[in-house]
Image (cartoon, rainbow, N blue to C red; front, side, top):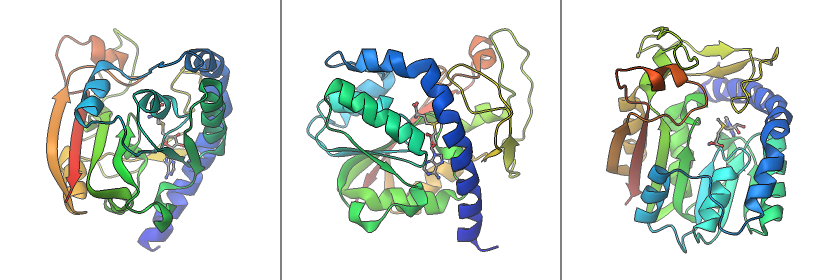
Length: 268
Ligand SMILES: C[S@@+](CC[C@H](N)C(=O)[O-])C[C@H]1O[C@@H](n2cnc3c(N)ncnc32)[C@H](O)[C@@H]1O
């Protein structure tokens, strides 16, 4: 199988799993988000993300979000004063939810339903800032090819902002606060990880789901995928706080692990 066939096989199957999760997410959070985004200036962004985006001067900038899901973060970026905002996601159900939230807030945000690997040249060099946040990288079967697409979208002098789960936490079986810490995978594991218990991380609702395949990637692989695609590291920080809806056991553990990181690349 060629590399591009492998990418397509994985991302097409994952798209079905995400599409299946979309109405389940909506059942648990869409009504609340509609109410929230009806208030001017509402934000879903935490202090770390807000500060980092402010430092990048997001107000007045053209911003794209990769794998934007229902747009809850991108709409907040718009509320920070960003100019053109475009969210890309592969699941039509999430795109529809994003459009509904934008309409509720009267926010001019575009949503594009596409596999990230298929984003076309009409978006090349159109954005000052591209964002990747909370639960994206591990779904990418080929990190180098993914960063090639992302780097293409950024204007010269523009930035890529990443706020993600630290790859170290993927070694541990997720759990509730107080659940034991079970080291499950090697940090260097290269086997695809297939799950069928559902992708509804908002409510934790489990269902017999279509298979979803994710991948473990080391911090150095993530950094080098950017560097190999012409991006220079401008900022990198690791944090002990929790940004997922799953690893409450790690959050509650008395030993701090790096649970997330921020990384800013600059395009020359
Ligand atoms: C965990 S969610 C992102 C959550 C979002 N950052 C938030 O906090 O609300 C991952 C998203 O990636 C999308 N996705 C995964 N692989 C993709 C691909 N190859 N192309 C486009 N979208 C993809 C899924 O549809 C899903 O909406």
